[in-house]
Image (cartoon, rainbow, N blue to C red):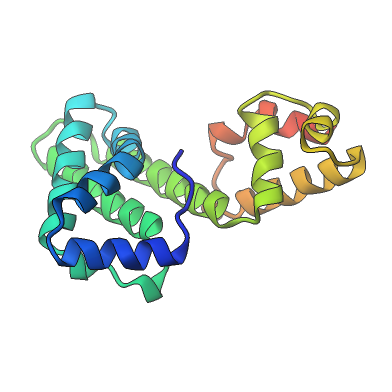
Length: 191
């Protein structure tokens, strides 16, 4: 997962893209292509479709650099939202061609919306909370091991994990189930 860029980086990138700097597009692609592809793949569940959407999203950014307004939030969030909208549109087009049932499409759309909200929440949360969650989930550490890795007390690690998980739980739609990414591996840090 690409880390969020500082707001100044976002403004400068938007200005460079607006001037038509090909190097800026390459830099942006290097930073966010994996995010775009993974979000598109999550919606489409197809590598070729995700590849196509990735190319189309960066093509749109190149042709419309002024569509991004730094005052509306980080470029990463804008790119993620752009990707999600495009992927959902493509998924609904596939549905119209009889490749998926309406129920399958809507389930994928709900899943993609939850994933996009969770991604935004994680990238927006304070670094200490994000670091604790990454250790607990990605490294599969419990709160004691996370505390040692972070250089904080076990109580502080537990507090950070609890708060981070509470923030992530807001990504779910009302009445929805927790996303699989918030499974027992992330929750075990609270024991």
